[in-house]
Length: 83
Image (cartoon, rainbow, N blue to C red; front, side, top):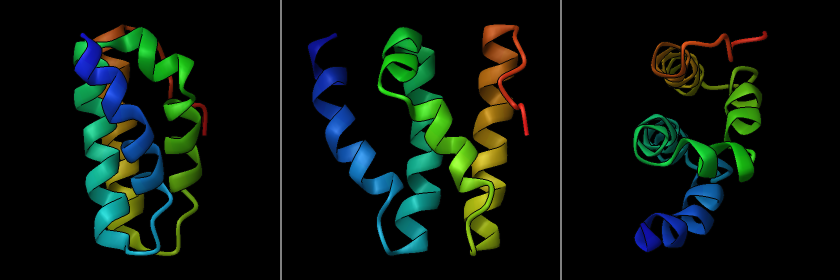
């Protein structure tokens, strides 16, 4: 459980990295982290960050952001898309 908290700061930086490959991979990580610790994802504002990725200039980042939000919506049973 503690290891997930250690992941949050690097994940937060990765979501804002200048390299699109890093951002798109980080988006997928948010969905996986949600499976393990949904409250942590919400507390750290990762869902809002995924919303920000939807307006990214790189289409792969946008696609992974949408996919991550979709996966979180399915897992949580609530609509987190709010585009």
